[in-house]
Image (cartoon, rainbow, N blue to C red; front, side, top):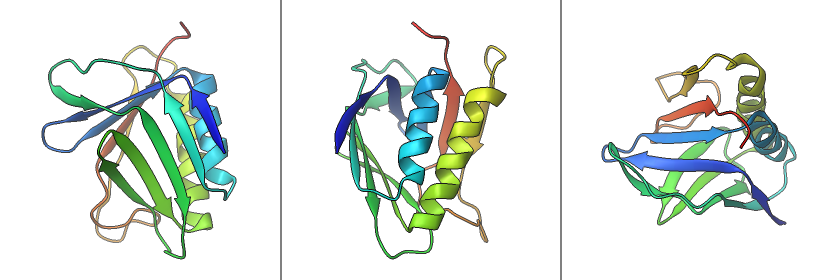
Amino acid sequence: MRRFVDAEVVRGAHGEVSLSGADEALRTLGSLLRSGVDTELELRTVTPRPPYVAAADSIGISVDESAKVLVAWEGERLTFTGGVEALALLGGNISSHADELALPGAHAHIEWFPGHFFLREGSEPMVVSRRPKT
């Protein structure tokens, strides 16, 4: 399955990922992560501005047998790879931000730490923010 989602993904020089989208885009991404199906998403085309050094043109969701999700940057693509349950937890987390991040500048960090319940060690740190509809 390949579809468009109106979101932007950029990466900083130290590997941090910023994912932003209107509430509908965040809910769509969350729903697709919870679906348990391999998916390719095309993203809004952006030019990264400092402090960001790269922009993704797509997001790949891949289901495997891992218990946890790996968030990785591959070329011009952000990937989420993991087991169905872990992907569903990540998807629920992202979807919930569509409603919780209503204030300007509000954002949520999704980062691995020892003992993290759904992220694999080596995952890129990610900040999720909601932007107004355009």
